[in-house]
Length: 258
Image 1 (cartoon, rainbow, N blue to C red):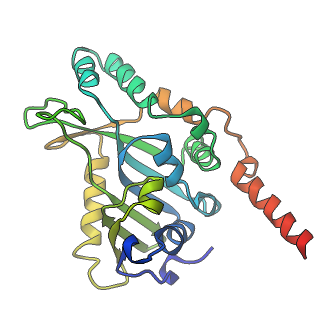
Image 2: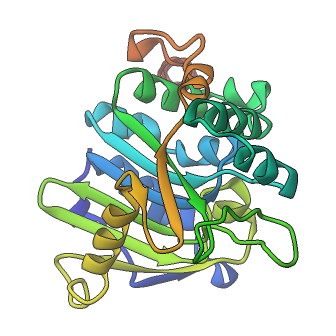
Image 3: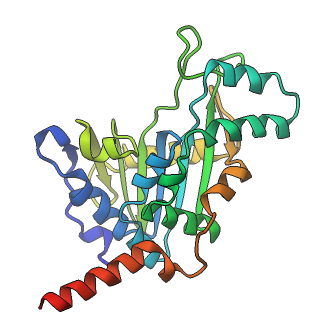
């Protein structure tokens, strides 16, 4: 795989001006990295599927991932969670909420299966950020008076001592990477500007990653039931993953054409 420092990244990308952010930035960065940290919006199977684009090379690199995400909580969900007096009961309700965002057909996507393999082998960790007000009251996503979202969108790629961070409007979804008009800034630790911006991205991620409460957020571990759902049917051997088998098939086709 290529070295992260050899990737010729621009300082900013905007999909409205013909930037192919998936092929020119995201996949090359992921392919050259040994770790990827991501803060993104709402948890869903489609967001996980897109997070895994280019994941094959990260697996080959022996890479690890950490994802910070947030469940889509309705007003009714919040009421149910707050009515419970035990962590176990609250987790059960949270699991039910997050399960609604997991499509069985999408879990079977090649890329989500690869994420399941990382999860199964302790190479992927997902934590959940809940948003609350200054009084500690949990907020939902869609009521007018008490709505709030975890909307930070930071990504951090690392390979040895080389670091690339990005920050902008883009979400970890198919629409975000391919269809939306999105823009983001990129900072490399071998270029000027990293100390002012890239370091703050890393510090911010680590602050949110810690289990516990901050000013208006609370970070908790991903419910075990959701983890189990994501690793169902995942093979033990990485070369039995669909993304590796698919590559073998494509190579065979290429040889036959010659």
